[in-house]
Amino acid sequence: MAAVPAWLRRAISDAHSHARNEFEDVSLAAGAATGALDAVVRRQERWAGAWRQRLALSAAVATAKQAGRVEDEGALRDAVLLTRPGDNVGPAGRFLLAWRRLASRPAEDLLTEKNLAAVLEEFGYAPDDEVVSDLADDLRQLSAGIGMVSMLTGAFTAAERRGFAPTVGAWLADALRAQGLGWAYAMPLLGAEAALGTGARTPRLAASSGATGIEKDPDERAKGLLAAQARAALRAIDLSVELERRADRLLAVAPKLRAKAADMVVERLLSDDAIVASEKIAGMSDRGLRRLFDRLVELGAVRELSGRPTFRIYGL
Image 1 (cartoon, rainbow, N blue to C red):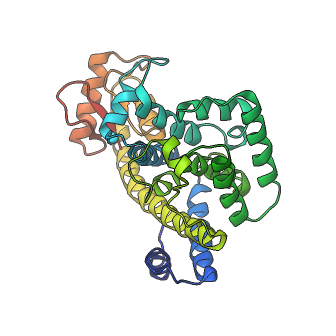
Image 2 (tube, one colour):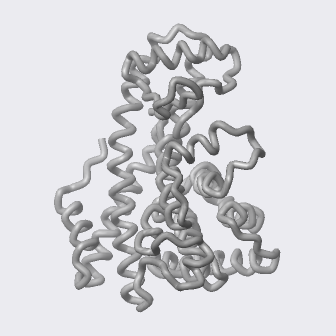
Image 3 (cartoon, one colour):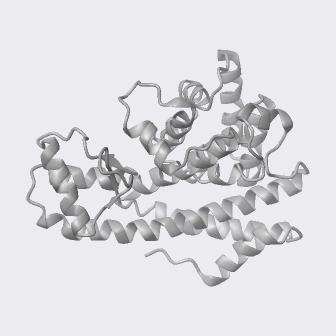
């Protein structure tokens, strides 16, 4: 189980609550938190997919709030899981698709021009090819061996320079961090932090007003970003502890499941935030899948997340 030392929790709390903290103290907290998170990521647990997608959902909720929308976790799940691939999932649903894209695509593919164009569209922008190409060039330079602090602040600056919201900067920073640390997949971390303090505005209005939740002074901005990274890393580690406990319970009861294709359902639950009761699973009927979920809930291995009697959604 991932354990965060008490001193590190205190240091992260101090970095958040004391504006006059020295840059070195905040850097220490951020570095230690990132190192602790890196250790969990490198374990490559079977439930890591569900972990990343649960973080993506949190980031999408924050993005929707920043854009002045009211969708919560349940509404965002419905927008994506209860529609067919290619259907219109609405603006908030597209925010979730953007963060799920970060969490599910190999880190090395995230900052290609093709992928950048797609994610910017999901965030509500329609940049031309030249803007996307210039952004990709900037990001390649940022990833070419400079320090982590410069890379993170540079990601936000690159987004702002083109009129994009701070949330886009957070997405880019998360992608750059994953590549810099050699992670196979990125962890959606800063998305839930970058929206703080911007108020209920659309992404374009937040960008045009210069609101980022981080002070404009370069040193203060860097310190604010490091503090946000430390908080996000701690939040991700705590979530990993919770999901590991739930995944262990699921894996413990898996041998008791007699339904055909039950192993495939277990893997889906471990690799994603949630799945719907009507999911098409090869070798399993709709009725059989519903009975399997009822059994898993009875055994305390999964939770029903929608709270509805129909169109149910299940996850760790």
